[in-house]
Image 1 (cartoon, rainbow, N blue to C red):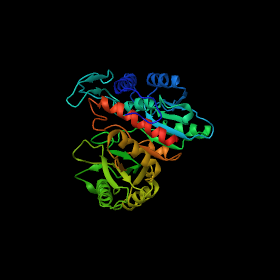
Image 2: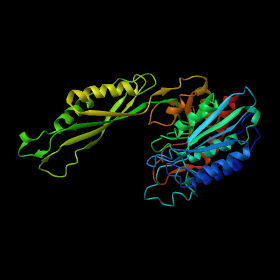
Image 3: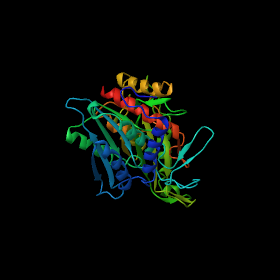
Length: 393
């Protein structure tokens, strides 16, 4: 289907072009934190299109979480024109075992529903980034400013990735007007869901100290487990809220318990637990943490919160409508606007401009034999092109 205002390209040629880009990115074994080869390939795609690529490494002083490479690529339009950004990540999760082929040697296999491209990053999210690059290839420079906000640190701790890119964007005074993140948001078919927000996330480590001793002499010990269990029982019983118009109810989950006690006849000296809370826009990371800390202190012990991100919402409006219109024009599907799922780097990008997430079908992300329908890549590239053109108009 032809995008208005752009030259017509045959479906076969467009499909081949975007697949070639995806394969080039997927051949780089960029397990998080990523740098080097995959960014070389990315830059080589954008430079001929007139983009300036500002690559930098962050976190070199923290070998446990870095170093991480990032890239801010920008092609400026006329003075005063609008600025639209694509955002995403070139790092991938480790492939794990049990693949039917080498995870970093992409291959196309014929399937009953059409050809599939296999390899780590096919869906999350090198396939989407290939579609972004293909989308801008035919957009004239005078249409407006286009940028790419691309990190190598999204699948890991995300300490030196998009946060560092946002710092650079602010220093340069080049914040976009709108940003689209290419996370794989589709569920059953390409186009059925976009994300207009996400819940916030906080992990809280709980610790209760006691006195070690023999189980036959409990009066000489102080067992921390009953206090930890009481604390967890009260936390588990919390009803944080009933949800809001755009968010599901907040939930608190116990994710780890540890006493470090291999002996059956020893009362442990310490007991620890970790809880994870996903919260909606009725709360903040701080308010959730304070509520948990109050319960922790009541039962004794300590609580150490780490806030991963706050909830956010891009209210339905012009931006979500132009995304929906582009999706429907190419697929015939009207995407559901959702805030479900885990966190993404959109939680950082929302601080500089309105942000929406839209991308490929997520059924195989982070799984062995990750794969994307070849036909979906060509369609997504056209959708992204429509979104960019509409955002710049």
